Image (cartoon, rainbow, N blue to C red; front, side):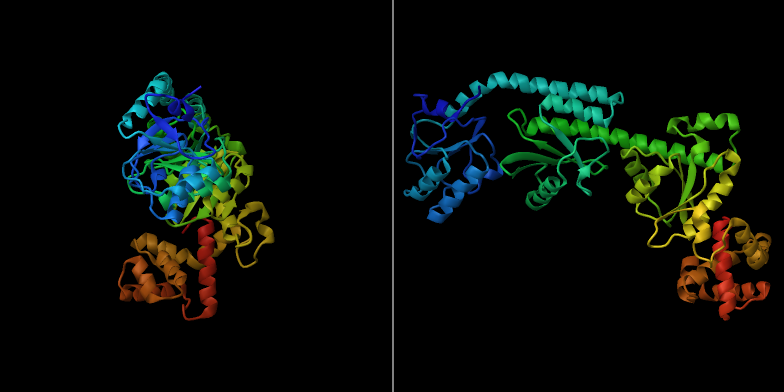
Length: 494
């Protein structure tokens, strides 16, 4: 059993007297500290013993009540006041409130130094220091195993055994576990802790002590590129030093996993590009997809419309949820290759964008067609339906091509001559037409996006009208042009 308040009271060398009624002398004492602040709870907590000359004790009666209430709420073991020092002459309000709360208020003889109490506690703590140092050694042994690829889940499991308390690794943006499969804490409690941390922390505070429902918690915000926070319920073994060691080990693991995610993303982009370009012989496909546990025949391709995707962030969020996707950037969109169709709702929820997806790939030769299918499906996405398959496209809006063959015919009939001119003259009439229509025929906005002078765009538009024999002043021709542009998206001409 550890040290209790009564051990301090009955020690004749300390000459300490209890001056409050209804004391709780069985309360455990883990450490003693001199603090003259008006709010010692900023630095002291559960099991700490406050020693003071009385400078910080308020003179006002109502302030004395609040003072003792704060100490009690912080679960401080008690307060010892130096006799005949600088405390207010009248502390009756403080003693009355201490009696109501059962809080320990002690008076210590003037000639006895506070260090005598500290020494007594230190003697009791010596046997615990060995256990704490042993815990730190175990933490770094766990870190050594982590470097070998233990994984964040097993790493946390081992660290919890080392410090004898659950560790919650939280994504501060979502208030949920940082990765799937990690220990979960009530989302409501996490939000309260994060909110209290953001309100009360200062620039120097790396570890914050927060009390909720009479439970003392410690929260650390990790200084890593992966935003994460550690939440631990405090026990007699955990202090700021031990928790800092734990944070360092977890931080190293998060940086290691981030590096692994980035490598996986680069490899995935490379493999996907080889599949799209049809550069892989059949006998090599299985081997190249092996690191991702993909079976190509069971996979599908999906498309997301976005101009500047953060693929590193996307890939990390998915990997943390045990979802593997191969990505490939395309103009104004991103292609994804995923094996399990059932994962699409979770992917859409994590990334937050509408998804159009193809039929099963079946074989490598069908990949280009699957890409076009996913593009077509995406064009049918509306606000009320964020995930749509190519197979269901026939039941959606009639104003877009109902299949890829129709899209190809429309594009060639309307924009085919423009495409030939662009190839022959190394010009950009098709992309200029698309940009001009996307900006609702605004010369200024379109020319700005194309990085050309307004007069240059006017010349290009006149050339488009000349080659196609259509007018961008005629609503019917504008509609036909736009329909052809959409068709070009679907067959990857634009």
